[in-house]
Amino acid sequence: MKVLLPPVVFKSISELSRAMDMPKPLHPLVALVNYDIDKVSRENVGRTFLIDFYKVSFKKDFRGQVKYGQGYYDFEEGGLAFLAPNQLVTMTGEESSYEGFTLYFHADLIRNYQLGKNIHQYGFFGYKVNEALFL
Image (tube, rainbow, N blue to C red; front, side):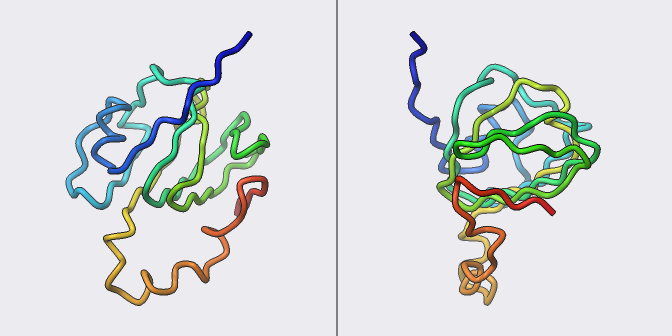
Protein backbone atom coordinates (compact mmCIF):
# COMPACT_ATOMS: atom_id res chain seq x y z
CA MET A 1 0.00 0.00 0.00
CA LYS A 2 1.45 3.34 -1.10
CA VAL A 3 1.52 6.01 1.58
CA LEU A 4 0.49 9.44 0.33
CA LEU A 5 2.66 12.14 1.82
CA PRO A 6 1.28 15.63 2.33
CA PRO A 7 2.58 18.26 -0.10
CA VAL A 8 5.79 20.07 0.76
CA VAL A 9 4.92 23.77 1.12
CA PHE A 10 7.42 26.42 0.08
CA LYS A 11 6.64 29.96 1.24
CA SER A 12 9.77 31.52 -0.26
CA ILE A 13 12.03 31.08 -3.27
CA SER A 14 15.03 30.83 -0.94
CA GLU A 15 13.39 27.93 0.89
CA LEU A 16 12.76 26.11 -2.40
CA SER A 17 16.34 26.75 -3.55
CA ARG A 18 17.76 25.25 -0.34
CA ALA A 19 15.52 22.18 -0.58
CA MET A 20 16.54 21.55 -4.20
CA ASP A 21 20.26 22.15 -3.53
CA MET A 22 20.26 25.10 -5.93
CA PRO A 23 22.25 28.30 -5.38
CA LYS A 24 20.70 30.94 -3.14
CA PRO A 25 18.77 33.48 -5.24
CA LEU A 26 20.35 36.91 -5.65
CA HIS A 27 17.05 38.53 -4.64
CA PRO A 28 14.53 37.04 -2.17
CA LEU A 29 11.52 37.73 -4.44
CA VAL A 30 12.79 36.58 -7.84
CA ALA A 31 15.09 33.92 -9.28
CA LEU A 32 15.98 32.72 -12.75
CA VAL A 33 17.19 29.11 -12.87
CA ASN A 34 19.18 27.82 -15.83
CA TYR A 35 19.02 24.03 -15.48
CA ASP A 36 22.12 23.64 -17.69
CA ILE A 37 24.06 25.26 -14.82
CA ASP A 38 21.91 24.68 -11.73
CA LYS A 39 21.30 20.99 -11.21
CA VAL A 40 18.31 19.99 -9.09
CA SER A 41 18.59 17.48 -6.26
CA ARG A 42 16.58 14.30 -6.92
CA GLU A 43 15.98 13.73 -3.20
CA ASN A 44 12.27 14.62 -3.43
CA VAL A 45 11.35 12.78 -6.64
CA GLY A 46 7.67 11.87 -6.63
CA ARG A 47 6.80 14.41 -3.92
CA THR A 48 4.09 16.97 -4.45
CA PHE A 49 4.89 20.62 -3.84
CA LEU A 50 2.80 23.67 -3.20
CA ILE A 51 4.64 26.91 -3.92
CA ASP A 52 3.57 30.33 -2.67
CA PHE A 53 4.89 32.20 -5.71
CA TYR A 54 4.66 32.24 -9.50
CA LYS A 55 6.61 29.88 -11.74
CA VAL A 56 7.18 30.21 -15.49
CA SER A 57 9.15 27.37 -17.09
CA PHE A 58 10.57 27.20 -20.60
CA LYS A 59 11.45 23.70 -21.73
CA LYS A 60 13.16 23.15 -25.07
CA ASP A 61 13.08 19.73 -26.75
CA PHE A 62 11.61 18.15 -23.65
CA ARG A 63 11.05 14.40 -23.78
CA GLY A 64 8.65 12.97 -21.26
CA GLN A 65 5.61 13.98 -19.29
CA VAL A 66 4.89 16.31 -16.41
CA LYS A 67 2.21 15.62 -13.84
CA TYR A 68 0.07 18.68 -13.14
CA GLY A 69 -3.03 18.29 -11.01
CA GLN A 70 -4.51 14.90 -11.83
CA GLY A 71 -3.16 14.61 -15.37
CA TYR A 72 0.07 14.08 -17.24
CA TYR A 73 1.02 16.45 -20.05
CA ASP A 74 3.38 15.96 -22.97
CA PHE A 75 6.06 18.53 -23.85
CA GLU A 76 7.17 16.65 -26.99
CA GLU A 77 8.16 19.88 -28.77
CA GLY A 78 9.06 21.85 -25.66
CA GLY A 79 6.95 24.70 -24.37
CA LEU A 80 6.07 27.13 -21.61
CA ALA A 81 4.27 26.18 -18.42
CA PHE A 82 2.80 28.64 -15.92
CA LEU A 83 1.97 28.10 -12.25
CA ALA A 84 0.26 30.59 -9.97
CA PRO A 85 0.79 30.59 -6.21
CA ASN A 86 -0.78 27.71 -4.29
CA GLN A 87 -0.98 25.23 -7.18
CA LEU A 88 0.30 21.69 -6.75
CA VAL A 89 3.07 20.23 -8.86
CA THR A 90 4.84 16.86 -8.59
CA MET A 91 8.61 16.58 -8.98
CA THR A 92 9.62 14.09 -11.66
CA GLY A 93 12.72 11.93 -11.65
CA GLU A 94 13.51 12.35 -15.32
CA GLU A 95 16.77 14.18 -15.97
CA SER A 96 15.36 15.76 -19.13
CA SER A 97 12.57 17.46 -17.18
CA TYR A 98 15.19 19.83 -15.75
CA GLU A 99 16.48 21.42 -18.94
CA GLY A 100 15.72 24.96 -19.98
CA PHE A 101 14.87 27.84 -17.67
CA THR A 102 12.49 28.62 -14.85
CA LEU A 103 11.57 32.06 -13.55
CA TYR A 104 10.22 32.19 -10.01
CA PHE A 105 8.74 35.39 -8.66
CA HIS A 106 6.81 36.18 -5.51
CA ALA A 107 3.56 38.17 -5.70
CA ASP A 108 5.16 40.81 -3.45
CA LEU A 109 7.54 41.69 -6.30
CA ILE A 110 4.66 43.00 -8.45
CA ARG A 111 2.03 43.78 -5.81
CA ASN A 112 2.36 47.59 -5.99
CA TYR A 113 2.51 47.72 -9.78
CA GLN A 114 -0.22 47.55 -12.41
CA LEU A 115 0.79 43.98 -13.27
CA GLY A 116 0.20 42.94 -9.66
CA LYS A 117 -3.29 44.41 -9.78
CA ASN A 118 -4.14 42.78 -13.13
CA ILE A 119 -2.28 39.46 -13.16
CA HIS A 120 -5.50 37.58 -12.37
CA GLN A 121 -6.79 38.69 -15.80
CA TYR A 122 -4.11 36.68 -17.58
CA GLY A 123 -5.62 33.26 -18.19
CA PHE A 124 -2.29 31.46 -18.41
CA PHE A 125 -1.89 31.81 -14.64
CA GLY A 126 -5.53 31.07 -13.87
CA TYR A 127 -6.32 27.72 -15.43
CA LYS A 128 -7.57 24.93 -13.22
CA VAL A 129 -5.35 22.12 -11.98
CA ASN A 130 -7.12 19.60 -14.22
CA GLU A 131 -6.25 21.70 -17.29
CA ALA A 132 -2.94 22.65 -18.82
CA LEU A 133 -1.81 25.53 -20.94
CA PHE A 134 1.34 24.98 -22.95
CA LEU A 135 2.48 27.46 -25.58
